[in-house]
Length: 54
Image 1: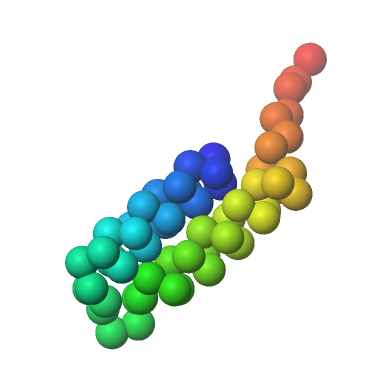
Image 2: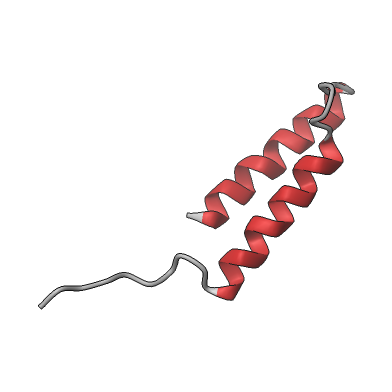
């Protein structure tokens, strides 16, 4: 799930950078940083476990 969020953030960062668009706080570098954080959490295994009841 975090990998999908990271992909969306990277896509938004690319669109912001190509269009030269930025909001007051949200810039393409902020989106890239957030995407890298989500990717690092995904690779660390956060949220990857599934609980199975028997």
